[in-house]
Image (tube, rainbow, N blue to C red; front, side):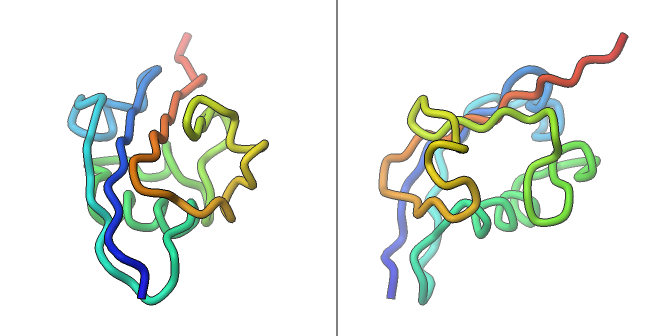
Length: 101
């Protein structure tokens, strides 16, 4: 069984408005039978943290286009995107590049 892991989440570029206007969150993900990956993290965020308008953050099982995701300061595309296995003390940043005009 995978032990609980503590990670740091950050939301910026307007994405924080969907999370009660709080930019930084320190969360501990609970035990589960498989290691935590980004796909499971997005489901957990949607069910436990997202305060409003989920369609502005997630689309299907991934982030909506226009949301930049960084894992430990690296583009998540270089880290395996949804398949990236989260590690204790990881820093995951979501930055919205979508701005109204």
